[in-house]
Length: 262
Image: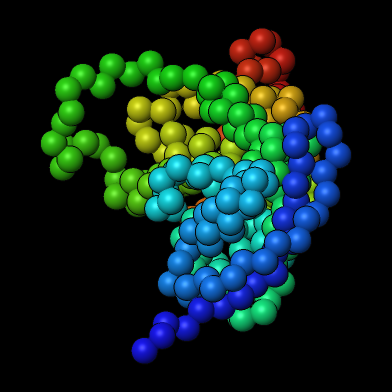
């Protein structure tokens, strides 16, 4: 029995480099298996383009297992596509219909300049992470898990925040291109753990400052960032970040002799 396949029409954003203007180019994706992943479908299209002597569609990827955060672009206006809690590399073609037209665009944010086609420069996230610095606690050799003095609720919440893979879907989905969800997840993760409490105040100050310096927009709490996150990072992280930041500002003013804080 012949396996059923689907045919799709792709409108793909093509842009040679950050200095040139981009445009949409239409391609046919023919005889695609419903069991193929979205990136495998693009691989098939690219093989056809290469055979014809055309330039393949450029997109970012690495593990293709939904854990590294390398991949990501807009599919019909949705970050990572229509499926909730799914990265584009784990999105399968069975979620699309035969003959459907798909519009593929890179993340749209000033802080994420286009490198080529669907690939963006997300090194702004790396600089935010770097600004957080290191922990100064000498952790020594690994302890037995049951001996580490971390309450389970704190450990569980820290784990949920640490699940952020830094893909940038939150920024791409936000009308303000805010990086508050990403930054807050990183701040929350370490603020909950004993190892991160020594520098927690300065970490919040530095990471928020770096986030602003990178040109990301302000958070207006619409919630679309969390809704589009493939790892379901919670909006409560943003509240934690705001609290950590405010506490750090007040402490800094008191240490400088500011008296009553803000």
